[in-house]
Length: 87
Image 1 (tube, rainbow, N blue to C red):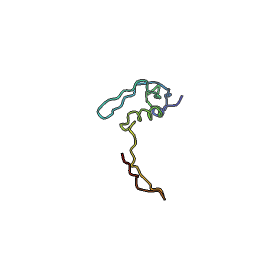
Image 2: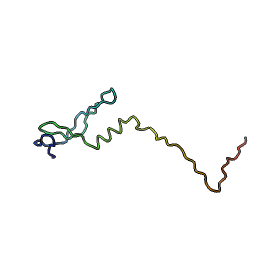
Image 3: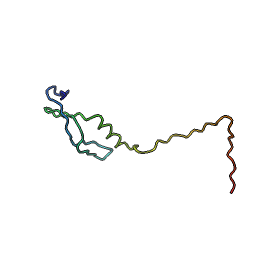
Image 4: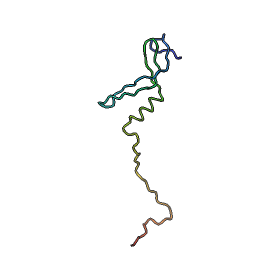
């Protein structure tokens, strides 16, 4: 067990709590979220890996393809004109 950095007396132990945060004007509640909780003062330190995963899930850009401008580099000695295709 880790010692508490807040009260210097308690011990931090792993618990699963309901994590709450605001996303814009919406409150988001995540049950069974891992956190280290002090047995004396109740200080909570959230598991960093779980926070990173939650942040990725709540990111409005998550799952969207990354659009990059397409760059075409000419190949030396290659014809740059497209061939004509006829029906």
